[in-house]
Length: 462
Image (tube, rainbow, N blue to C red; front, top):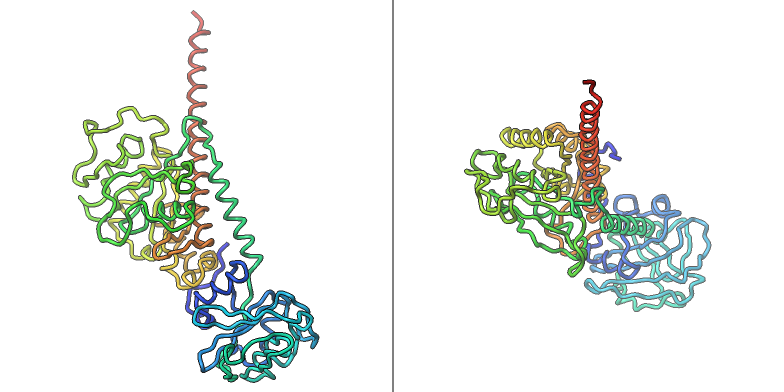
């Protein structure tokens, strides 16, 4: 799915002038969709030809004008632009201006003449408001029969334009995105392991200090809570903020049922000896011996005599999948000591037959293209290079490396981030299924061998 495009700031010159707050305000008016910049006059030209080349046959659209007086104004239409010269009926069209971050809306009053398709002009709203009029950096304004608005409120009577932009309203994309998110949530809520004795598979999160282990749990929990939350301690520190072994159960909403997964958080890995997670503790964790809230002691691994030690853990207590949490922005500077620790862990996990995957976090910090739009994670050549490098360093196939973006500074959820997080959980379930299938095959093989031995003894000639 990757497109071989190196990460750069090239798209930044095409960023619109509308603030994120203004975009959200317009999208809220339209039903919470997203805007995609099609045309920017200062780059593509203050001409009708440039406008039509970029915007014809695209819809719905939001056209925006800017002037030296600081006014931000324009219009919305659900009809695709063309150069026919004809009027087009649109009863959903409206003009607007911003008063600070507040949108003032002027609905069309005669929808038959809502939009006119003029070849030598930019967006043309019913002989009432024209942006880039006559291929000039000017606005035509004549409130009247088709739209009514106070000119002073709309644009301050300053008709000289400093910029004109046209955005496409990505309606279909967000409907698809919404359905995809809903499908993933429903699948996760209804998932059942193939082994009846385990209702909540346990996934162990392992990674360097600050890579985002605790943040991953918080982010997944946020998706199901419907708002950004922070149950597990997370943040930036040179030493691990997680000092205890914790098993987190994600709930479907604040008072909802626990979901069929438990995310186990460990102390962060550190390259120096006697610091961070002790590899000798790993076997106890994987085998289910470690008690909840066990206080890690890097200088002394867990002993069977310790309080709470599980002497006879069941299958439900063991780890069924291991997820390495790796910071995408630090893969290239991973120290030799840390890489050796990860390799030792990987070998130990392999010997136990536990499937492993990699959660590649902070992809937005690693690539400006992804920071601009999380959807670009599968278009970024730079992120593809990071995926290949982390796969090589950790010795896992590329298909086992899953990019995610945790919630850190955000106050609101984003569907693109949600889908990456939910897809990671889905991949964990697939790996868990592989673990149980392999376990079942081994048990069947053992039973067959035992049965053959019994048959040999029964039918052995005297």
